[in-house]
Image (cartoon, rainbow, N blue to C red; front, side, top):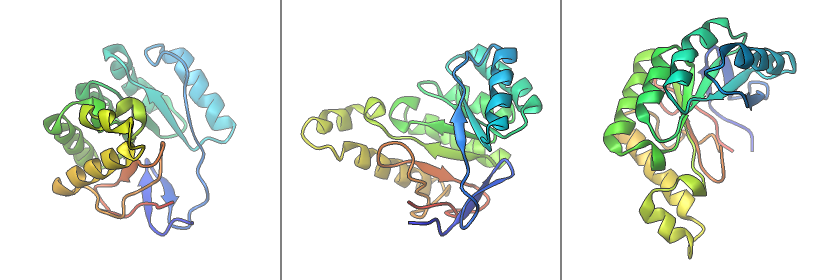
Length: 192
């Protein structure tokens, strides 16, 4: 099914009739700026319009400012476990962040990421996969494979409560969920 709604990720339109956008992810240590920039440039040359980079530590978060300023395409920070890294990447200019609410912390931590994204007009992609489910949903997964869907629904409700995205914000990333919410166009995103 084609996308009905559209968001802009660092100037790149996604969904809503826009051409298909290729996104890839670096495999370097993000703190190694030269190696990461080399890979970002190679991905852009190969046709990637968006590039995601892992931000697993402070060195990677600190590198984001240089990476963003020298990248030929918008960068998205892929962050797990520490919401402060997501906030730092957004403050460094990342066009968006990909987080897993199941491992980024509690609601307070997710709220801090949402606020940082809102302040900067950045997008949030909420990734859901079995490795990042909240504890109560991980236990459910053994007998109900819909645990990821429940986590996805929970993340959507939390975003709605913070007035960041709505029921139309499904971009269909990861296993069965994923959110790409644009604070300037509440709910104006893609569907699978």
